Amino acid sequence: MLGILLDLSVNYKLLILMNVPFNNLYLQYLSLKEEIDSAINEVIVNSSFIRGKFVDEFEHNFANTVGVKNCVSCANGTDALFIAIKSLGVEENDEIIVPAHSWIATSEVVTLAGAKVVFCDTQKDTFTMCPISLESKLSSKTVGIIPVHLFGQSADMDEIMKVAHTNNLWVIEDCAQAHIACYKGKRVGSIGSVGTFSFYPGKNLGAMGDAGAIVTNDNQLAHQMASFARHGGLKKGIHEIEGMNSRMDGMQAAILGVKLPHLENWTKNRQEIAHSYMQNLANLDDIVLPQTSPFRNHVHHLFVIKSKNRDNLKSHLRDKGIQTVINYPIALPFLEAYSHLYHRHEEFPNAYKNQKSILSLPLFPEMNRLEIEYVVEAIKNF
Ligand SMILES: *Cc1c(COP(=O)(O)O)cnc(C)c1O
Image 1 (cartoon, protein in one colour):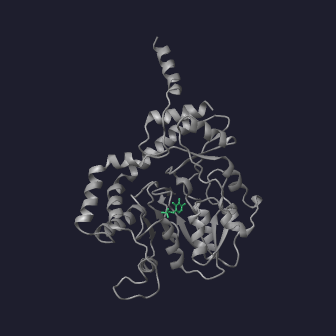
Image 2 (image 1 turned 90 degrees about the vertical axis):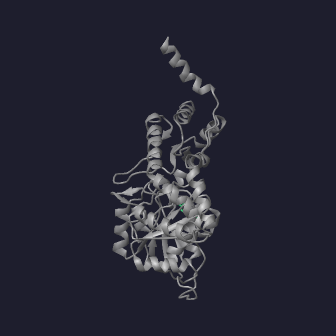
Image 3 (image 1 turned 180 degrees about the vertical axis):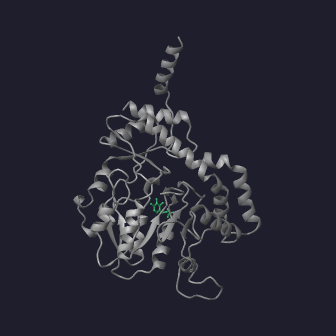
């Protein structure tokens, strides 16, 4: 009798139509509502709108979290990359190598800073920069490398740093999707010359608006980056260089300050949900699960599977009420924005193959068991 009931309950899961969102930021707010509301109120009471003590405090705490000496906050993750490149110094015709698979922020800032973007391929299974392809793209004009810890997994940093040291290049780690991810026990952002972070609301540590940060152990570079982001000077009336205005506001810093102590637990939740997906979706014919390479841990900003029937799978899941996303539908070299570079698909075989098969499943720290099981059942039924 009990067996029949259990069987029935399994089948019922397929009959009930649920809505599973890709992310649910409101649930995270609710879990910290009182603290967040009072932090916002404190910013207002102190008129601490731009910079101020909340920003100073967050910079200090975030530097400690990553395990570096300096954190320079700024307006968003794109600015973080731009400020880092400008402060490391680039000249016209300098080349900077970035992976073919990333968000366009990683490459557009290179052009914006006045340098030339050179793409290299990614690894087929980890989606991160391929060190062999990286080496093949070096030229006498290369000045820097921007590995991206894509989807929450560190790039192959030993190999990338080896290439950088041998060729005297700087390395900016784009950590926008990988807060507190590790490579050989070191947190990302502490390995290259500089690490850049985004606190866009949907990132693993998200503000309630735009915010970003740059971290480094190099005190002089930190000073230069802070100065560049604040109109070229840290003292009133003194401008050593021309800079820009890119700052984190007090409200975002106060909110991030409330959220930061929860980052480890949220990351654990993400990893448990990913584990659950891995176990339940193993051995399905058409589904390739994400892989984590040795020496790296994965903080699962995104859970990206591959399927030959990706588009049909996506519609099937949408019909079941499950929201999925493609990160990203077109690899960077093939975007219209780079059509003037005339890249061919064969130049970036892994990035090209992956763009046709990748699908990101819902994954957020507050996701419940029922939602996970529902997604799993819906995929198994495809
Ligand atoms: C989000 C993101 C950025 C840019 O961050 P913003 O805060 O949105 O400007 C840069 N690189 C990667 C890989 C990202 O995912």
